[in-house]
Length: 205
Image 1 (spheres, rainbow, N blue to C red):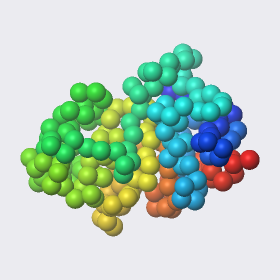
Image 2 (image 1 turned 30 degrees about the horizontal axis):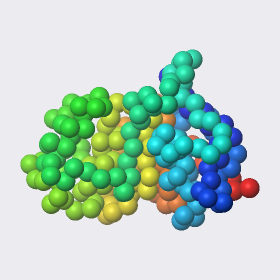
Image 3 (image 1 turned 135 degrees about the vertical axis):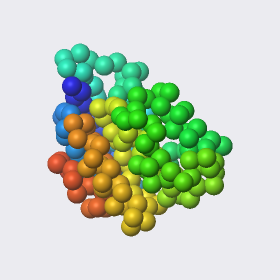
């Protein structure tokens, strides 16, 4: 079982504290919403938790059962989706899926993925021809369908229409149980299922 512990975490850019003295304890099955005004640092905190940005002060610990996981190995336990992540646009959908799952174990048979994404009719089309909403479905699908214990989602319904939002909510309900799920958003529709919630404005002083 994976656990993530955030101890007295603080991040500063130049002279501005993005957050200070933040504490979190998360176990598999937990879900956390990170909320706050635009520019408050939600994405920064998510990147710190993923290990892609260092903290200014404090510590983040990953443990599997009682064994501490080295920071350089955190990526093995994480999947991440956000609107600002890039996809290899020269790939077709089939090639993108195949490439991704060379690095992550799939949570189900890959042959079903196009149907689950709602993109089966486009599996041989290059991603450069996909709309922003179709690309967001791919990012979310690859994150949620990777067999990892920690899923990090930043503004997950960006670029999705009403049908896509309903699809996202179904995907989370179907594929996020027994994992740690962290979602950065101010949209109730994106985080209404989260069991815990923090607001970053409460960690500025």
